[in-house]
Image 1 (tube, rainbow, N blue to C red):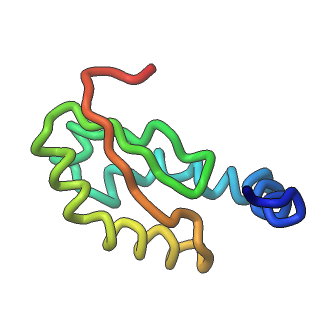
Image 2 (image 1 turned 30 degrees about the horizontal axis):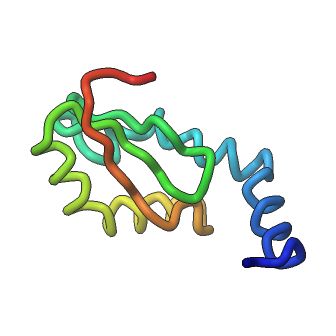
Length: 97
């Protein structure tokens, strides 16, 4: 079991308002990042933590996101010159919420 002194810095880092604002910007940039065609089938739905969760409305879109994951992370983290996200995960479904 992890000790509180080991967990606390990680939790507080994820509560940084500037970091949250930068992470939430991914939604506005999504179409430019993945292209119009893929953006039509995908939407970032959770970007408050270090894992970007993307809703994919088709299994092929989920596969494409997983294939491009390293590039997506590199572009986002390079743009802000810091590690915004450490992973991209996909969920398949028809709508947000």
